[in-house]
Length: 80
Image (cartoon, rainbow, N blue to C red; front, side, top):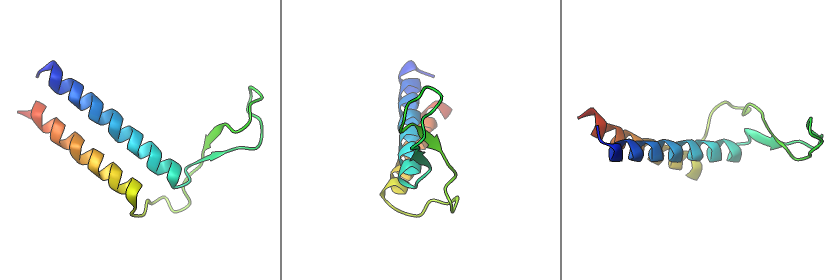
């Protein structure tokens, strides 16, 4: 295994996690509260379960699939 291959995989993992977070936000998994949190701040993000527990097709779902495919390709390199 080479350091360069590991760095590529780490980059692809970060990219995939960012795409998943964006997809969840756009699907309504994160909401902003009008009540103050423990620190007295408003508009803090809180996680709520998506009502359908399923992501429909769309640009954000497609972005997650592309990032997943890119990660799979990067993982092939260290399997050799």
